[in-house]
Image (cartoon, rainbow, N blue to C red; front, top):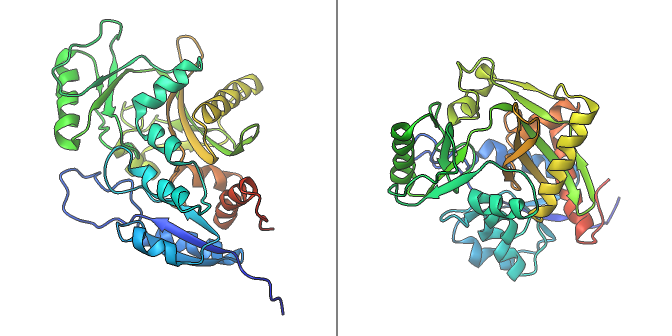
Length: 336
């Protein structure tokens, strides 16, 4: 009988409360207990001892008293545009290893306009954009219709409705004020890239990166929406087809893969991320839309899990891969 100590992994998360909210999608980024248990069971299946830690304010007082080797972090945080940074910042302060990107990358990535400014500095193409803070700003003359409007610091397609692409000033300012009023956050307005949409999963660190099969979002059955609204995402099994691997030439695959890896490193991501981009019908070039360095892990629903499933791999192996990338980065022993 082996006496080798099991790796103790704390699992940090935020649960849906199913409270009465102003917007249908207010808790879209949070997870339910089923997903938490799926990750817990996957970690236990590969030989880990798992401690569940819901990322409420109480975690500040409790996490220091647990004998934790590493944290598997998929907590979304509670408040503010830097909410995804809360747990990583705490863990770094306490010198506790954790999976995924640090607080700086997570904070920047959630703020779409900040992420776009950084990648643009590295000559990565992204749609022209403008942030509206009060809805009274004039539209910058360099922006041309159609324009898509979304919350500047939200994920999971929150705030994006089926009519979020504006064709004129009246539609634009209606959408801007809807975001500012309903979500209490600035609105990001960016030029709408007419073309194919792809999402790219990446594992690794620095120059040692693996791009997973590229997935295309097929909007043929979305009644003309043509983009990833909250409604499309929520009803994805009925409305959209996920094409993975996408039907791309070898040249197109390399173009998109290299583009995604450049974004991953430009934003200093660690271990895992998922990148959304569109390839323009006009110039054939990819444009960065947004990045999720804390990708959803809902089995059979979240994009990264669907990409992984298309490879014929089991969910527990996805969880193990994320954990192993982190263990390797910290110089710890990986799990076979």
